[in-house]
Structures are given as structure tokens and as C-alpha cells.
Image (cartoon, rainbow, N blue to C red; front, side):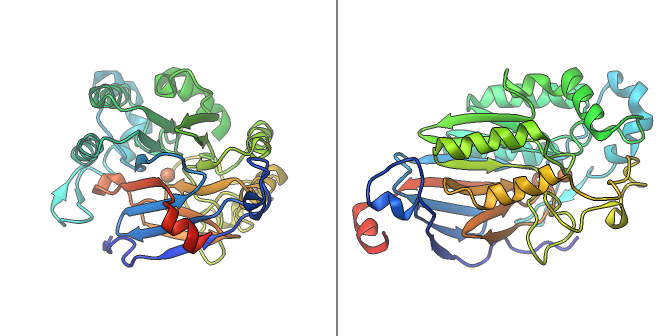
Length: 337
Ligand SMILES: [Fe+2]
């Protein structure tokens, strides 16, 4: 695939939200306001609700395929994906690289910039290989940086294995991925960092269940500033079917990969009403700062009802997002708020 430069030009937007429960003073009745700028893979968010700087390194779609003898009985389920990303081209240098090298380089960057958190937002693995999962745990431990893990559609998927997507996800989270959640709920969890709440919601089946919708609704009611992490991007008009969560075109008739991925076809009738309600809830959440996702392997920004969704380049090719959440200084408050 031909690679393009990242978000090439800087952009700035000031976005107003509705009334929030977060604060009741006059100014906040206009809602959380923020400004964000983009320069290649570097994003800066400024808002008065951000009380101290937070440095985030966001990684998605590393597609590690490391394996050992424990993976031999599973070769018939892992063969295709084990060969899918063996060699890649670095998104910036154009030099040949590979997922392990790219992941290590990104962790080195996270250490250099003293990141507050590393976000692992799905498809870190091409299949649930024990060797790869142990390797990631040990590399993360070496950094000493807190991390958040959220699964993608490949992390738990052994191609051709019998079962529904939901049951296979449950099984392989339980058997292999569980330590990465550090005791948190694998399908929905809140992580508070310096006054900002990061919500990891697993939409790796493309769908959202009732419990997840209820969890998200509670977080909206709570009013704390939110960053939503989902592996599969939320639907946005004009984008491909890969923007598949809450996508009204997502259904059996538009599923062209079920044979190659050897998984059940998407449902005839498309999304459940719960998933569609989630889409609406996300883009009407007054306390949502942004959405971070992956899956597409190509960077983009979509803004729906003032809420930006940032899709990361794949880490298999060295891609990552370098994100700063920053307080707004007095001069900018006077000018912008
Ligand atoms: Fe994915």
C-alpha cells in the first residue's frame, strides 16, 4: 500500500459543547470548549478542563505474530495472519521494518518523551499467541509507563475456529489476553489520569452490548471529561465500511472479508439497536473530548457534532499518535473562550 504523509497540515478547531454536569458556573454552561491542532502524527488538545499536561502515546495495529512451540497446535488457525505483516515499510522513513521493531521503537519514543500513558488500542497481535503476549507484557514492564489495553478484532481471533465472535472473544481473552487488562473489565473500563477519564470500550466484534451502552451512559452522566478508546472507528458519512461501529451500511451484504478471515458473516439485519444507540450517545456526549481508534491502518480525522475521532496509522509500519492534552493558558482563554 502506498503510504501518505500523516495529517499533513496543521488545523485548529474550537468546539463548543452543551451544558455539562461537570461544573455549574456560567462559563461552563456554554460547555467544555477546546482547541486542537494537528501536525503529522502529533496532536495537541487545549482546554480549561485539562488541569495539567498529559502525554499520550497511542498505538494500534502492530500485528505482532511472534510465536513458539505452544502455538503449533493452532497453526491451522493462525497461518494466514502469521504471514500477513512479516515485513513492512516504515511510514516516515520508507525503510523496511517489521512489527516487533516498530513496537519497540514506539516504546522507546514513549520513554524519551516521558509519556503518562501508553494506549494499546487493538490488533496489537495478529492472533492470540502466548509468546507475543508475554513479549508485549515484558516490553511494557521495561518502560515503567502505565498502559491501557483494549482489544481489536484480530487480538482474540483464530481464523476458522468454531463459535460466535462474542464467544471466541470471551474465550481467548480469558485464556490469553487477560493479564493485559491489569484486573479491569476487558470489555469496558475507565482509567483516570490527571483528571481526564479514558474509557476503553471493546467494539472488536463491531458491536456494542447492552452493558457497554449502560456503562458509557453512566460515564456521560458523571460529567468528567472523557477520551473514548475503541479499536473500530465509529461510522462517519463518506467513509469505508471499516468505520464499522454504528454504521448503517454494516450487514451481511457488505461483508466481503468473512471468507478470508474465516469467521461468521455479519448479521443479515446489520447492527443491533444498542450499537446504533451507542453511536448516537457518543456524538451527543457533552463531556467527550475525542475518540481514538485504529483498525483502518490509515490516519484520518472525522468530526461529528463537534467531536473529533482520530484514526491512527498502523504501528506495524511504525505509526503511532503523539498526543498532548494541555491546559489552556490565560492569554488563549481570553482570546478563545
Ligand atoms: Fe482491526
